[in-house]
Image 1 (spheres, helix red, strand yellow):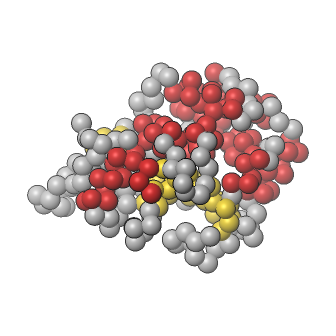
Image 2: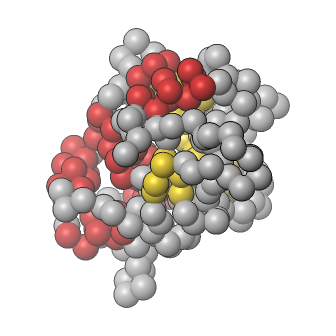
Image 3: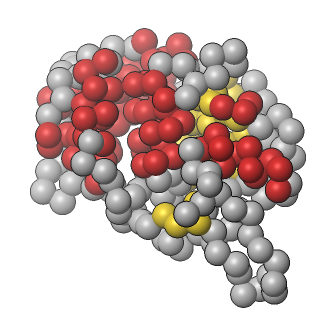
Length: 249
């Protein structure tokens, strides 16, 4: 399985790992950390041995799992386990077969960068699967896979409901503390503001492509730049529709 920038890595489709009993504990446990509480396996209704087995599979240096989340317009969000020995991490990107390079959302690990998605984008992607493309199509699973890339100051009141529904779908008893931790208390970055891309002082009078949001956190790969570099205005318009952020307001 080839992903631009990782052509020589042992990347494999990772969706089969979702069936492991301890997958969600291994994938989300660290994200449940808050200023007041350390991550607790009891949140996930799972045995520690199952969580350890899932973590080993997720971090296999010989098989880097890629979780494909296809959405509208031929786009795919990919969550890639970058299992470099002694320096593991996760990459969150968006790809399209017509693009020359992927759009970077966020990086988790020793060189973290984020946030990578607003709630509006994450929720829209989760609910608009392209069922003709390979990958994960269940909206609850898609939402949970993308949650680690989230960072948004304007989380709507009903967001916890959607997270709780997703947790229940994968067999985790939802609690208020867990859903709040997953939504609003990211261990690696602060919640950010998301606004339409504004003209850059370096670009003269050239107007930015409309419709796609930018992040105000300088740690984010989406701070002040287009989500996917080198794409045309028409490709950007299609991406904005697919992200649920067109038209800009």
